[in-house]
Image (cartoon, rainbow, N blue to C red; front, side, top):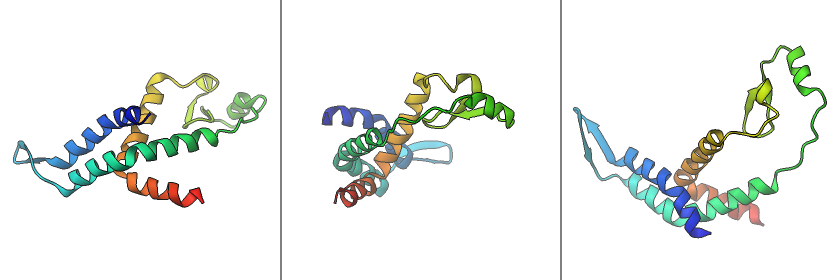
Length: 133
């Protein structure tokens, strides 16, 4: 499980390392040392797997079955909305609101969560220890 967590965080960690360690000045890109790069690598190695497991467990635990509203699409149309709440991560067009999220939406959402976990790993880990009590 830990190996899979490290694999999922590898690309976001590389994205942060590239952002923080490549200096683009006067049209030439070169690698420079940055303390932010060290922070990202330490956060990825020490905090990402635990923070990932805690966040994924928390998200699965908080999924409560929602009672679907009858005629929700018609009610949204009556109010003049072109988008409806999907009950997941955002909204979709009224015709697509009842369907499942596409793989691209899931991948994009996961990438944003992983980028956040790499950069804010110590904060998420601290929050997990605070809410454990």
